Image 1: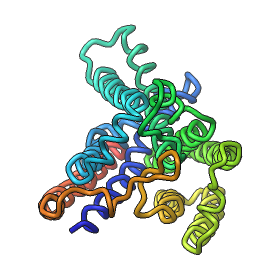
Image 2: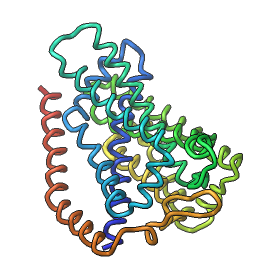
Image 3: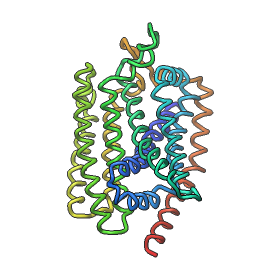
Image 4: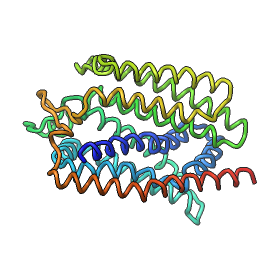
Length: 339
């Protein structure tokens, strides 16, 4: 059952990066949209994510529950050492969801709508930024479980050039996913071209941010290059991601959008695979060469068995309903767009 639980953990993080990332990215795109086009971007975004945006956070909740129940030592270490970026990320999620609901469903339209919009767009950027910072901190090897002072224990273990670069890369990836997903939701040719241009711009931004991650890793003495290119899985993943990127740009130029979301999702999947494969089963690299492992630092066998069965049985009920929800709202959105 241990491998079942670990698989659910990886898949939940993967789904959150894809669907939640595109969700955050929609707000990032709105933040960097010209004023005259913001209303059109919002309408497209509401049609795409409005009815089911809250379901995206289910994947994050599953990951947190898995860590809390099945890997308490890992959960305790991360929630203690990284409590500052975790709190900022969670506050961003709360602020974003609240602003989205009030902006979209408030019965009174007044000047507060501008405040809601600012909270929504900026929290859409801040949340994935700190999500990336947390992910970068987990592999930076700077988390100190026996710090001598507050700065070493709760600031320097997550605030450095590498983690900031990873955060910026995460923001760019989210914007790229959102732009690609929203191309197919655009109802007019003008909006379609606008989202294609945003997809290209955000993809370039992701490439630049990715390069900065490698530069920052070298500056911080993190062997990121050998991690990714030092094994055949990493090399193959990057090769496939690069080939799919070339195909995606070709299809963007031709205006063919049907398989673009699949290609974008495939690229992100390959990047995630190349980063996580080399460390498995290590999930957190600690200062001094120590680590926390999914295979070594898990709960009691009885706990893992119960958790595994709960995840399997729950998925039988939840996943079909979730995908039917996605199908239903997409079908309804298409009818409204065509009417």
